[in-house]
Length: 475
Image 1 (cartoon, one colour):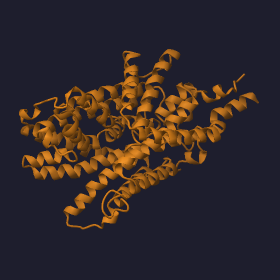
Image 2: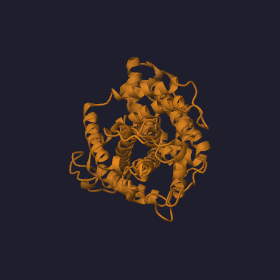
Image 3: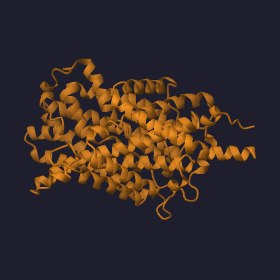
């Protein structure tokens, strides 16, 4: 007999054996993505503002030349989570990523809150990145002698006369438009843009290495080892993105084989580029002279390569745009998956009959991100992006340990090594990084958590597909 106790209801789990059977049905998502398209989506989400802006910021005022070690520490912590994601992705090739993994292993209430949280986090990331790119766009337009009115250049309180950030709104809506054209078209755009971005980073390294002055590396630890660790906590948010890519598992032509490889490839390639680029940045300029907002452009300008600096500024815009696409893709697939499972109204699980993508939720997320980006300062929106990702990492790393011991013989195309040490490192590192978050972040999270609890108890718990299946079994 099926248990109907409150605890059993909250922690009922989605059977892993039936998950893949639900994918690819009528009205579902279609499989178009190969290994390199998936990898490009992952790299598109990882390499962005972190390398073009955050590296200079951390080098200038937090870690000095040891910013390289900050990226390595953050990379090790992120790799522990990436390996956990890779094992799940090869075992549960379904849209939803951390939401689906939590639902299948730790129970419905855990899956719900991770999914609910990721909707906010991914949407906020899109808004933050759009605001950041908007500043570059406004600057470049000004370089052509176009004097734009102040009211359209930023949210209220961000500058004299600012009323709304028009460029940020356009970027959010344009990203939604690209995604609604179909996953194949979106992946093609992402592949080209990521190619430009990787080429730009390689250009930075190849040209910059000839202008390295080893004296700039001294002192290597101007802020002590504590500066390295603080820097790691800061740049950690530049070394994920594969988590959003993993939400597209259901659109991979061979998810069990390709998804684990794409997760590890995207993080590995990104980390190599991060290390080389930071080595060049801190070697070209003394850390005290690095521009916190446009480190690489200022470094090349300082050595007389102003033309390269302009190319970097333009390339940075193209490169950062890929972050918008990756995280809006992630948000839309999480929402789609939750709706298909009955935790949100089925209306949201509708897919376009021709392009086979969830157009309704994509446009809703695009509009929501546009509102955030157009009307709020970047620092307020940025505070919304941190906690959810770290909690998702805690859930995934914990779940992979639980499932390995609960169902050790379950088929896995990828098995992470050194179980349970590596996922335990992921849990500890994520919880440690959570301690660096501001109290205001916790307050906003608590409010969103309370709203989610109300939605779950008032709607999701009763309309869940598992609830319907349990009702059918009892009858």
